[in-house]
Amino acid sequence: MYKQHQLRQWYCCFSSLGFHRVINWRKSHLTIISAASAFLVLAAPSVINLPASRVLAENVISQDLDAAIYYQKGVTLYNRKDLDGAESAFRQALEHDPNIGMARNYLGNILLRQNRLDIAVQEYSEAIRINPNQSEVYYNLGLALQRQGQKEAAVTAYRQALVIEPKMATAQYNLGVVLQELGQPQEAIAAYQQAANLDSSNDSAFFNLAIALQEQGKLEEAIAAYRQVIQLDPKNTAAYNNMAGLLVVQGQATEAITVYKQAIRQNSKDATAYHNLGITLYNQGELKKANAALKNALNNYRTQGNTEQTAKVEQLMQQITQQIAQQKLQEQQQRQAGKKPAPAENVATPEQPTPATPGTTPSNSSDVPVSLEQSTN
Image 1 (tube, one colour):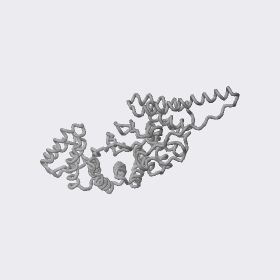
Image 2 (cartoon, one colour):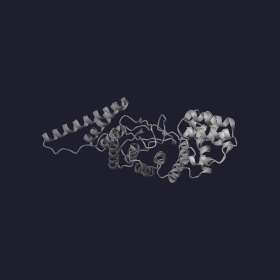
Image 3 (tube, one colour):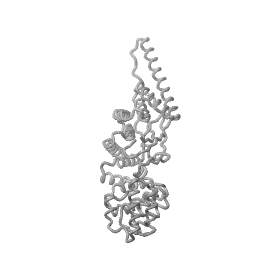
Image 4 (cartoon, one colour):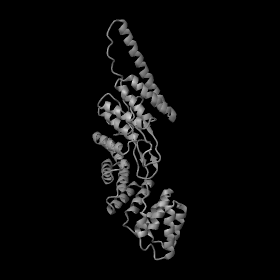
């Protein structure tokens, strides 16, 4: 499980004997992960609340004393996570004074958390009408619009938040996510880079930046970004897997093997890392080591109940076992004939996979096939 997220799922997409490349797209900040069907697995957004000091610093919440009392009660209940009680208090405050902008922002937050998106958008829009100078409200509006699927409108809201508060790293990050969803990778890369510059501890920004660079064929830059992710979050096995896959494509199989082993040290149940390690060793001609790695992958896939992957690994292991037997037979025949054993022939190359989506699988400069697996912790 990554530091900022509570929920993850793994996705697999690979040909019969191909690699898995782990791509895990993170959505905007929340404590929820939402998964797309193919290569995007994005962390969902988080609501921004005004700091308590700012809330209390609002000298005149309302000229209506009852409205002010209900508002403060709503803030207290909200901070205690009593959302139903807070909603009731904020609505009572707005009955007395409908122009308490921050009451509408809090109410929007509650509605967003309850996935009542249409009403949340209305409340945020009203809050902006009352006070158009608070970046947090534009940010929260962007979240609600994004979850509604109104991505262009979400981009506008995030950008307005950044006009008011240019150093809002979370808005830059979420802007990058929406731009990526809209198929604007260059703009997404720029947003992720800015988010990382504003908050160098945001491993999610570096992770999504790496994937965006990877999909644009900028492999060296993507590898550098994955290294930054691992430095910030050494337990992020998806970053190890993604980086190792790129190293394979770059013809650096030895380093890729080391990186896959690092992923396994972080998570001994990482079937993807074992599988990818086995494939890499297989293509290096290390048949026995490949078989051992694939056996671990097989056991973990079985534990996960992943029957499709289990069948594919079993097929590859049978092929490797046959090759090992053939090598032994050849060595025995050569010894009996008094000949020096011939060097082992190159391992048969697994069939070339078809990329699941255009542009996500870089062309392979060697005979090592690469296909992609989505993964999350």
